[in-house]
Length: 227
Ligand code: ADE
Image 1 (cartoon, rainbow, N blue to C red):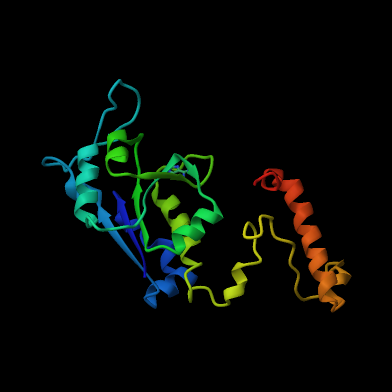
Image 2 (cartoon, rainbow, N blue to C red):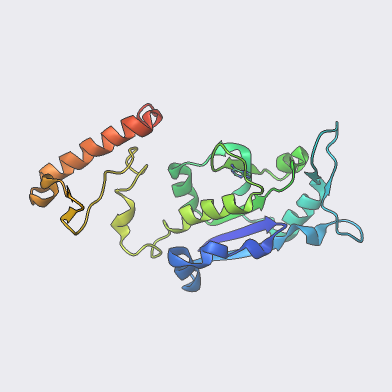
């Protein structure tokens, strides 16, 4: 079973939206599991301190390597083969193909950063893979972890109602998705394209591919250049 262990200073964020809808139903049905670990449980001193000022100066605070490593060591067995991710805007951008890989594996351990960052030595010593969900900065890794988990969990067999509803969508084909229509046929004078009402499945498939290509060219030309 896909198991997620989240290392965070804010365990109350979870399950959050992952407790609703597809992922929430899957969680309730035991198709995947979610566990949180409070990093502060391994904090130092009376105040359970987890961070300190950056060596070399500068703004913000940095999560201590010893505290994070202790939390990881307590939360993960030595034989735990799950990828260890650190959500960070410095990470490699998350892609649908990495999501697919993760979803087919045993699960993930995810560290959610806060403050300015995490001591580099903890990242190295515990083999953390930094992952970004986009070129913008969140106030912490928790929402990013939820995004990653949502993307993975919906691919777990049994979580999504119809198996095929995953294969046609944006990115799975390398293209953005074609436009969708449903009733009514006439909405404020805008009609459903005739081809979709023609019943000619080959023609419909060709039209959809053409639309997907045009939308991808206009919005994400970078996707067309990928190997
Ligand atoms: N933490 C803060 N910003 C982030 C981002 N863009 N992706 C992943 N984790 C983050």
